[in-house]
Every structure is written in structure tokens, then in C-alpha cells.
Length: 523
Image (cartoon, rainbow, N blue to C red; front, side, top):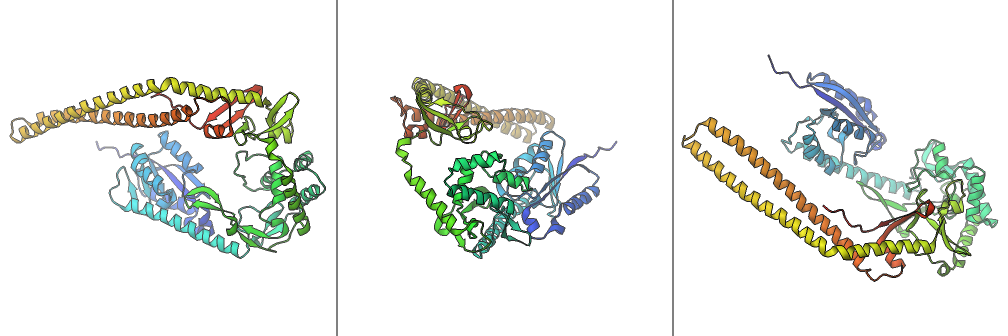
């Protein structure tokens, strides 16, 4: 009876990025076309059977944080998929390092067959030629070139005074006839005018925010979402739906000058083509054009508001309100910073959302400054005491562990050398026909098994050794950091910034302190 041919449960993966749309490649690279090519390939090969289709529409190939791809790999981990097929390798991904890792590690360990139809790639556990690495590098270079070309094109548009943002500034919408031109959004523009008018009339920024919330006017990010925009403000509190001090202040400052009909762009730029982070651009390099669209605010009102803001800031005496917890202290529930105020019974810290917006959005999370200082000082002193008590014992413990690993590694090397000598002796014995091939094969099987056991144990020991080094590096960093403060009696801004990442305050005076350096878990 003939051996039954393996059936590969095959996942079809299709991806289309935004740049594919922009280049008008809908016909050649469309999801439907990719699916058709993959299905036709499967139909022509009896060992393949379609299991599931996974799609990522509008996702770049420069990272693997894609819903369809993640779902597919979860099914791979669950043992539901034996084979992945794409139209081309570029559809799987364009990022060099992660794509190579898939071929060298993931596909091998999971025993996944991978097929890229038009690239004529059929990978089944081994890279037998340089075709795959070369194509991966070429795809990565293509992404870099595309990114550079897009960046140059956007810069050219900005230099012509055309709008290049993904979303229009609050108060405007993109012109349906020309997406690089802004037109006034009557509803949002009226809110902008109200904010400017109320500020000129003497209303405080936070009172303006209160009024907008009382009138149930959605904040800019919520307004965009209500109007069908897939918008996120890239802040920790991206789902905020109410007006805050910061939101109103940003509209009043209006650094892009949109509200007076101007266009100021290229204020941030992407750090690299394959990194999602952005960096600030020097003000001298901003691209500015005047009278590019209809203004919402009169120039005189705009100038008046900016003078009023500068005047108010100059009047503030920051030296009387020093808060060395600034930038470190947050509400444990809503995530906003805590704000300081004075009462007869002492200085208190409360959630900014509660203090400025109201109890309907967050509770006050009140804690006295003196109590917080005591809690933080005690936590620092506890780390200092632990560092003092553990430093000698921990070094001795780690030395013993490393000595044990080194001794065992040496014994394994000796065993391996002896095993190799025995093997070579048996080869010589076989060549002299002093033993049969069957006896030699029995010995070889035992030799291979013993060698594999020794090699695996050596790998385990090396991992333990590497982990021990990492542990000691982290431990030494923690130790030295806190030993510098062994005489600490009071807090200072410098101490807090050097030692603490953040402090989260919860109700009932519950505080969670996250230190910059933590004592690592023992291995």
C-alpha cells in the first residue's frame, strides 16, 4: 500500500498597504487579485488544501503588528496551519530582520511550509539558496526608497503651501475637491470662535473647558470620531471625550496658525522609515505659508490672545509653587497628573481631572504632600537597606552559581572529547573490518544520542551563564544606584528624578512607586 501524501492545511495571507492605493495599483495588488492567484495555485496542487484566509487591508509591510497576520500566527501556534501562501514575499512583509527571523526560526520550529507564488519560493524548513535573503533585503530597500520618496513629495507639497496632514485642524475639514486644501467646518469653527471670544472677555482657560463640557460639546478628538474619522491623539488617554485645560490652551496657541488662514508645517518628522516614532523639528526649519485658506479668527484677536497668554505666564511666580514631584505623580485611575494646592491643614495633591473638570469624570484621589513624602522616603530607604544587606551575600551566591556552571561545562567538554575519541576508534575498527556495519550502526546510534544530550546540556548551561551575567548587570546597577543614597534623610528633585519612573496614587492613600532601577528576581 502506497504512503499517504501529506495534506497541508494552507493559510492564504493577503495584504494591501496605503501606498498601494496611492500608486493606483488596485488591479495588480488588490486583495481579490492576491486571493485569486493563491487559490489557483492551491487548486493545482493536490497536497494543499485551503484552511483560512487572513487579510490586512491598509497596513504597511514594515512591521508585523497587523490584526490579520497576528490572527494567522495564533492559528499557527494552535497547530491549525501547516502552510502559508502569499502572492509574493513582499505581501508577507518588507521589514528585513523580522522577515528573516520568520524563515530561520519560526517557520522551522513550527514546521511551516511557506509559498510565495510569483517569486517562485517554496520554503520547507531550509534556506537552500540566497534568493530569499536577497528578496527580503530588496523589499526592505524598496520600503526605504518609498518612504524617502513620500517624504520628499510631502515636503514639496508643504513648500507649495498645500496641507499634508492626515486630519484637518479642529475647525476645518479637507476640501472634497482638493484634499490638500482646508475649508471651514461651520460647527467646529463656531466653537473655536467661542473659545477665543471667552478668553478675550477674561475667562480662565479651565472655566472655558468647564463651559464647553456643561454644554455637552464634544472635544476635538471625540468630534473627529463622531464624524467618522479613525482618529487617535497618540496620548496615554487617547479615548478622552471631554474638554481639558490642555485642549483649550492648544487651540488658543494654535502653533500651525491655521486659524488666521496660514499654514505652518514640517514641525515634526519621522525618525526613520522603519520606526514609528517622531521627533521635533527646529523652529527655523518649519515651513510657513500665509493666506492659504479662509481664516476663522481675525488677526487682531489672534494677536491679542497670544499677548494675554504671555502676560499671564509672566505674572506667575513659579518659585512660590515648587513641586518636585512634577512629571512623576499621576492619578492611578484616569492617568492624568496630580495637581498641588494648599489648605489650612496642609498641602494636598489631587487628580487634575477631578480638580479641573469635576467629580463626574474622576474622584479626587487626595493625598497630603507630607504623607506622600514620608511614603516615598520610606520606600527609598527600604531599597537602600536591602542593598546594604544583600550586596556581599548576593555576590557570593552568584560566584557559587557561576563556579558550578563552569565546573559542569568543563566536565561536559571532557566527556565530549572522550566520546569523539571513542567514535574515531570505532571508525578505524570498522575500516579494518574488525566489526560489522550493524555493530557500528548500533554504536553510532548510541554515540549520536549521548552527544546530543551533552550538547543540549551545554546549551542550557550557556543560557544560565548568560542569564547570570544579565542578572548581575541589573543587580549591580540597582545596588550602586541606591548605595549612593545610603545617608538619605530628605527628598529632593534630583533624588526623585534619578530614582523614580512614576508614582501612581489611588483612593484611600494607596500609592504605587515605580523605580527606574529594580532589584532583579533571583535566578
